[in-house]
Length: 114
Image (cartoon, rainbow, N blue to C red; front, side, top):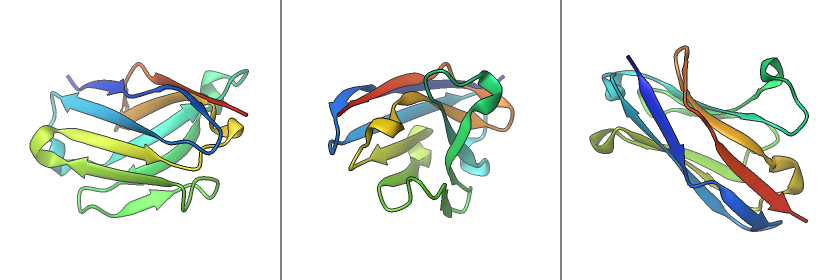
């Protein structure tokens, strides 16, 4: 069973930075793609927004709204994925989730104050 644990969320002023981490277990980490999603305040679970993906080969994909501000990376030796977030905006406020396949972590809250 895949287990995912996000960390690194918190409160930050607009323009600031945060780095989220996602530690994975129960999977051959180097063989899987990892996604980050987010759920903004007032949005339903089915309205969660895809943010970024890093493939097993290390290719990176981003939603348009974070392109150039967020960077996804992975450390296969540590079974960990990172989401470096810079130039944060109030609209980035959300619970951020790490996802592998159909398995989701519990999420970490990011609050950006303007």
